[in-house]
Image (cartoon, rainbow, N blue to C red; front, top):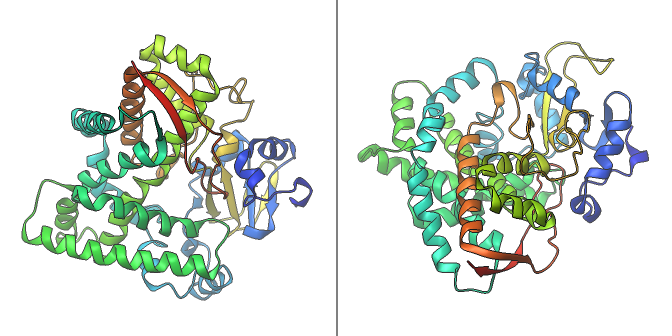
Length: 408
């Protein structure tokens, strides 16, 4: 059990610094049961990797429970009575497995390959330059709200085919939907998630209708063609569109904020990056390792398994703590040190196996461009106040990041 570790993932202390807890958890033998989530937590790198690479481990309960059992579990966890959330969020490419997952992933994968993503570099750079131009005369900004929040959603919106002016609203819907995946699933948060899912669905219905009349060179039009070819149904269409837009917002915004915070906490590493700009790619990877923006995911085992010398029955739920695995000293020497040149850096912030993050190339390109531009245009960047990090087990990032800067 986990009570002796005073595990309170909704507390301000955990949000401020979860890593002492993770370190203590890694010292415990085997996996540790967390009753509030009815989940066995894997905290060590090797255990996390073993679970996520095992083909017997799946995301969806449908492989391990009957429809009645699933309904009972949803009601117990307050996941029930959410008609649109159930259709488009609780089912998705992320929470599907096997042939369904492979089929849906194939419909969008081609637009997220390194070659396709690198073709966006000039467009992203131009957008980031314009954004910095609007902020350069200010002595200080909130890096999250004034800059980071405007880039990932704008770029992923363009890929899908969302008009630029609608992207800020998509961020609001996305954050209000995703918040229900954490530990606090109160009725108020439930209502917020369902209401925003409904609004998101209606928006995408209208956008789809426009693209059906006038197709364009975007992912929305490509997905419409896939639906018309029988490669995805209508619910899968909307679920996949929502997932792409939601995934393109929150986690990249969070790691942009925590990445800059890391550079500010380790000024020698920021100077090293200024002196050796060729390190930017490894620096971005280190930002994902150091503060993994999605530190918790789950899997179910489809048959009896042995993990960390423990036996687990079919249907057991495992919580893989990417945030802990990425600070495991057995894998990363001096893991609590932020090192922009760390190599090798085989972190698990993007997951592993069949569910390896589809948008990892785009997220890393966004960050490369933003931080290269930031360090190139501003000779001095200072933190105004210590940021508060978001509460929860499933997210990691500062809510705001107020800085002062001086142009180069």
